[in-house]
Structures are given as structure tokens and as C-alpha cells.
Image (cartoon, rainbow, N blue to C red; front, side):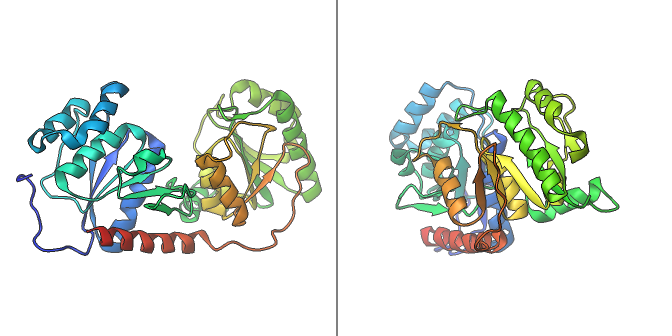
Length: 351
């Protein structure tokens, strides 16, 4: 403890954050998003700490459960046993931020070592939520220490997507286009070959009905077989541009999201859904019949909230109905600004 440079008195402003990097892109992006809020609003310095673990889950679990009994002088050494790349700054943090279950033991050790409050991002079991001072979730779990983020952080925004579109099309993005972002079968969403046929047929119908063309991007989950099936049914004349990830992967999703007057995305990916809404404020969500999400899961609750707030409309793969929303949701930027202000105040109360 004596190695840290502690400030005198009670600090009411957040000037230093320790951000634990879980080493998983989605989790890292969410942690980075919290850091960005404090950098922009309070001028805080963010220091990254590696959360890469080389030990099995059982040892991590034992450390997580027993961290309160580890002698203070051994805390840095214990952290090094599981997280060999950890290098601790000298300056004490005002807040420790992490995401992902594998970094929970490290966050608990650092919290005890520094005395700083801690924040966890993402889905977490109720008993573990007590390990943290704040838990930031995309949907409520009725936890006393929770805050609800308007949209899962993906690093995407309308401004960044517009810049990507300008780079892809220097003379301006194509007009009269809709965007379709396709994932694939996952553990919770199962798309059949028949549903892919139905969706491709729907895309042909919608293009002719509304006089548009499609900007299409598949993903790593789609697979070459599904891509070939889609291409065999889609009328080439309704495709303006396409990224077939399985055969020719390239970056371009952000540009496609920006250019699309309407945006659709398959339901299997929380990240893709969140990216689409971050750019366009609203997205159509394509749902397979075989959805294995538990009704009380975080993702199911998140989708329900997005639909209730007017940010998402759920569609089957056949018979997609396009209609104007009965109300416009609060702009994402405004919701995010409210969240940022509330988060900063909650953290200041912990200092």
C-alpha cells in the first residue's frame, strides 16, 4: 500500500482510472467506453492494466472467493500468479473498471489493494454483483448497485460511420439503399436453410416494392454455405454492394450502416444490433423461429427494452412489414449524455 501516491483529503473529482483489459474485443470496447466518458467529462487519465490470465478457472475462482483473506502484503504477488502481465501504476486510482468474468479476481484484488471503488460492465450473476460498487448493465436485474446503459458500447457512432462512408464513397454514398447485416446460427439463435431462403425472397420483394437496392454484409458466423444459398436466390439487380465475409472478407460495415436509409440486422449478435442502433437510432431485427434465449436473460431484456423504447422492431424472416413508428425515441446521444452525467455523479459519491 505504501507504494501508492495517495492524495490528501477527500477527492470529489475523478482524475485517474485503472481500466482492466480482459483481452476480449467486445469487453475491452465496453471498458474503453467508460474510460472515454471520464476523459471527456472530467479530464481523467486512464491507465490500462492487462487482465490476461494464464491460469485455469478453478484457481481464479478460489482467489476470487478468498481474496478478502489474503494478507495485504501478498496481494500484488497473488495477482501476478494468475495475471503475469499485470504492472501496477504508482498512482492510486479513483475507479477500477472491468468487464468479463475472467477479470473478476484481479479487480477484487486491486480493489482491496487500493481501496478504490470498482465498476463491472455486462452480465453478471447476482451473488457476484456484491463484489462491485457499481454494475453497468444493458437491462435491469433489479440490483441495488446497478446502472442501465442506453446502448451497449461498440465503439461505433453515427459520426464515425459517416466518416467511413465518406472514405468508401468520396463522391457521396449511394442513394435509395437499405442495409442488411447478416450473422448466423449461434447457441441461442438457430437459422434454418428455409429461413435464409425466405429472407432472401423477402429482400427481393422489398426492393421491388420500395424501389431500393441492398447493401449487404455477412459476418464470420454466416458461413460460405449460407452465403451461396442467399446469392442463389437474391436477384443481382437488387444488390448495390455486398461484402461476402466467407469468401472475401473486408471492412465496410460502418459505411453500409451509415448509407442505408433503413437498416436490418439478424438477432443473433448483441454487438451487431447495438452497432446498427448507434448509427441509425433504429434497426429492424430479423428473428429466427428457433430462439433459445431465456426470457430473463440480459440480452432478452435488452432487446425488450430497445423495442419498448422504439429503437428496434422485430421481424420474422418472412412477411416483413415496414411501417412508421408511432413515436420517435429519445436521440441516442441525449440518452448517453444523461447516462454519463449520472455515472460521474454516482462515482463521485463513492469517493
